Image (tube, one colour):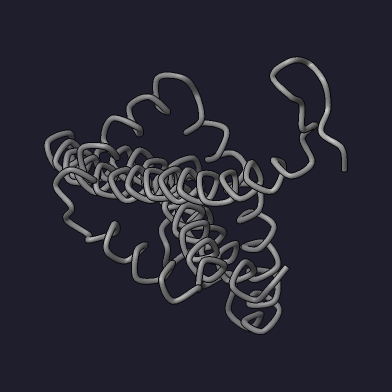
Length: 207
């Protein structure tokens, strides 16, 4: 496991800590000021514990997001949205793939795409849960209209995250297909000399 994957898990874990903190505030009726007051004097230990918890939660959130976004309806929606973004070519991913493949940097491209998928899917789940808990918390403290406004704005943010995930998945499938086609043809060609050289009459040529 390289450093980039560790950072990705930490990013996912920090996002998870955000909605967990909102859930605790919602359940206990506390405020962030109360929590910070209890943590005073324990900053160094709290930092270590937070980093360890963030990494562990990041691994869990990554797998959970992968399972949820791989469900039938969600997966089909992601494919449809990703295909639509590819037609619009908003992110110029097709050109980027051609350039990197031409430069023989396919390994770098694969790592880049997989990193984008991990970050996007974990962020989608984290933002969704943060929006739910945040909207409930704001609605309880400031009234239903403001809570609804937070939910609507948060839903737009979740949609943007899902678009990023769908686009990354579409690029990954396109890259995998190109790689499969590229390496399948030489394999078929190399198999031909080993085929039995049969004559039309059923006999065999002398070697």
